[in-house]
Length: 231
Image 1 (cartoon, one colour):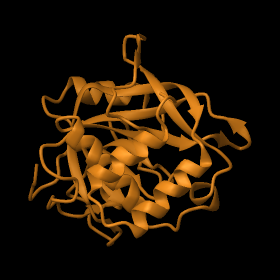
Image 2 (tube, helix red, strand yellow):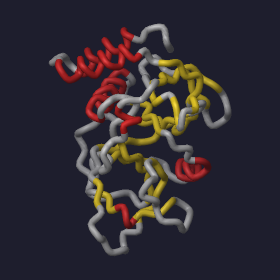
Image 3 (tube, helix red, strand yellow):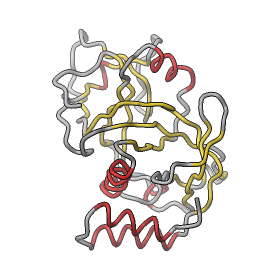
Image 4 (cartoon, one colour):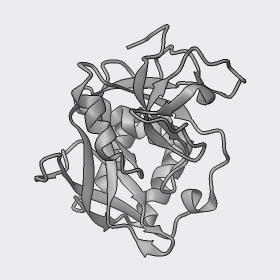
C-alpha cells in the first residue's frame, strides 16, 4: 500500500477529533477494527458523496482513499458533543439495509445545529498493514479539483473524490498523508438506526486509552464490552 506517487484520482478525507474522541484514539479503535475484520474497517464521514463516488469506484479497479490529519484546531462540538450516536446498520448502493458487522463501531456526534442526525456515512476500507505504516508524499491542496468537475476543492470540504492536477505550480499548502487504504465492496454506505452511546462509556474509554498500557486490541475489546447490547 505504500507509494512514492499519489494516484491521479482518489478519495481524500481529513480526520481529527470527532464525537468526543481525539484522533489518536479513533485511529487506535479503527486499527483494532481492522485487525478483527481481516483488514476491513468502516471509516465514518459526515459528507454525502453522491454519484461522484460511484463514478470513481466503477472506473477504477483499485480505488484508494487517503487519510490526512486536519490542520485546523478541533471545534468544541467535536471535542465535547452533547450526545454521541453509535450507528447500528447501513444501507448499501442498492438500498438494502444490513446490520453493522460485529467488529465495526462507527460513532458520530448526535446533533447538527441542535437537530438529531438522521444519517451518517461510511467508507468501507481494506488495508493489510497497520494504519500508521505508510509512506505517501504530501498532498498539495491547491492542486486538487472535484472529480469529474471543473470546481476547485473547497477548503471546508472534509471528504471528497478528487483529481490531482500535478502540472499546477505549488504554493506549499501541503497535507501529510498518515495512511491509505483500498475501498472495497460495498465501498460507501449510508448509516442508519443510531442509538445514543452512554456518555460514561465514552469518557471511560478516552481515560482508559490515555492512562492504560494495554494493547490496542485489548482496549477495543473492553470498549465493546462497555456498550454491549446497543448494536
